[in-house]
Amino acid sequence: MTQEQNKTIAAARRPRSKKKRDEILARTEDDQVGVQAFERGLDVIRAFASEQRPLTLSEIAEITKQPRASTRRLLGSLLRLKYAATDGQTFRLMPPVMELGYAYLSSSQFWDRVQPYMQEVMSELNESSSVGVLDLPDVVYVARAQARRIVQNMAIGVGSRVPAAVSAMGRLLLAYEPRHVVEAYLRERPLQAFTEKTIVDRDAFYAALDKGREQGWILVDEELEIGLRSLAVPLRDRSGKVIAAMNVGAVSARASADQMISKFLPVLREAANKANHALSFG
Image (cartoon, rainbow, N blue to C red; front, side, top):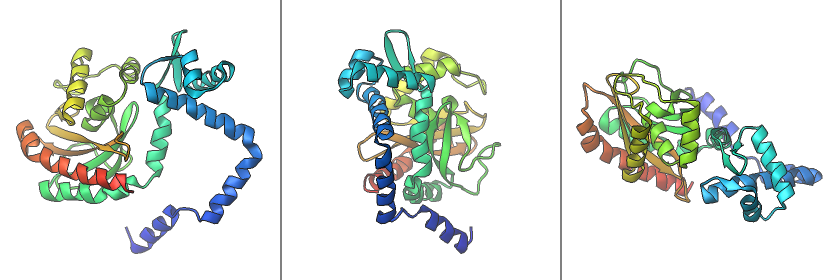
């Protein structure tokens, strides 16, 4: 990328001036009804985040301190948008609601702050390192430090999508999602064999998620493509919430599964810890 292109991109990323922000806020005051409805809708979504389980209408109204009638209308909007589902008694968020979080992550500059740490992984291990976010049914690559070595047959770059279930980053991020979100995902996208090593048994898949969440990392061993191993660890925001994953991949001829854990994992964890610190103060 040329210096001039870098300047153009940097200029586009600069935050608006305070005067410009104030002008935008002033214009929103002309539509307070719409703004308040939007805020109440966000309150309903946040209610699920605080409980992480299906909720009744009464529970949501109580958590958000909104009238039941208003809460029912807002839930109706979420149902129409397929951001929520109901069994007639309780309501739960559905995977499409994650589009809201992905929209933020895809437009934010957080991966600019983690790029140096992916470069450290790539330089020390001579293997490519990436950062991905969950946008079900896939994990989306939002940053990458590309080694010169060829890792796999498929071309991977920023913006690439890989099925979450067979990606180390995607599987790790699923491990930190509420179980009902994972269940809804698997109902819509049943486990599929990409290789003879792919986990296709649902109980075994849940066990892999539980183990990954407990140990704080996941290794996917030739489940997406024969000859490819990938290791992932979580990235967290300042509140400690897992928002992304960082990985390193290698072909099986260069690194065994044991070597990925003994040699690659400490390097990846150290880089992720530095990245988490940068994200906390970014």
